[in-house]
Image 1 (cartoon, rainbow, N blue to C red):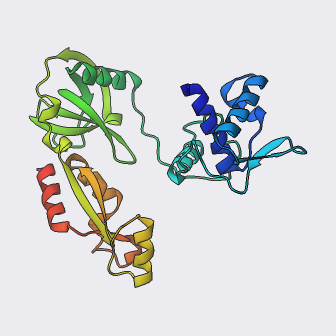
Image 2: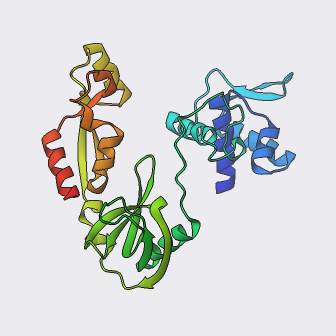
Image 3: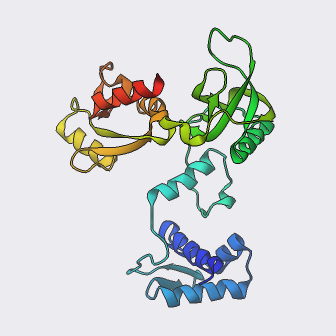
Amino acid sequence: MRWGVEKRLEFIEFRLFWEGGINRADIMEQFGVSVPQASKDLSLYEEKAPGNLAYDKRQKRYFPAPGFKPAFLKPEADRYLTQLRSVSNHVVSANETWLSHVPETDALPVPHRRVEVDVLRGLLAAVRKRRAIEILYQSMNPTRPAPTWRWITPHAFGNDGLRWHVRAYCHIDGKFKDFLLSRCLEARGDATPAAAPEDDVFWHDVFEVVLSPNPALSESQQKVVAQDYDMTGGCVSVPVRKALLYYFQKRLRLDAAGALDRPQETPVIVANRENFVGALAEAMA
């Protein structure tokens, strides 16, 4: 089956499962196909997934039959909610997703962090070509109060949930560091790299963070936290690059679990904390 046909069949199933119905116009609008092609797609879907469609002549619309079982789509809540969040955050319009009936929704706004297009383009080229590049960087280090030109050898990008960083070898400090993209003011030049991507041990080494419900919660609260975080046997193992452990800890407020009066504010704790603290200290040294 051709890729385009398969995607249209998956789209039919997406609308049936998540939005309760579909018609030819939906397929035509989403994929820019003709009326005959949309009809053919629905007929093919009926052939490939018999018993899934129920047609309402009055509404001229297809609905999921009582025995509907997805054949082309693996229904995932995360996939649907990701599209919904992208629309809510104005990252994309509803027309750029598979959603037609977008429920009223909102997402916690994250202050926009401006990234210079030319800087990002230069960094991407340096990563692609495995070269060094010079950036004008505004550090928060008190010993560097003004923007400073510095050579770096970038090799990857990371996101902490709020901000984008470029992971690079710093020619000044002689080690791999994270540079906030929004603080890279300019980029220029091209030079021999000072380190190879495989030299960044903490980027490639992964630490398994074991999370478990906060024992200060009630038994029923711990049970729902375990369900919320998809735990098995009361814990879940989350693989995190050692270079990102600091951000992981901050995002989940794992560093505040023992400092807050309300355990509800930190529903999970690190079960393997001793090893976690050691790995974090190693990565930040």
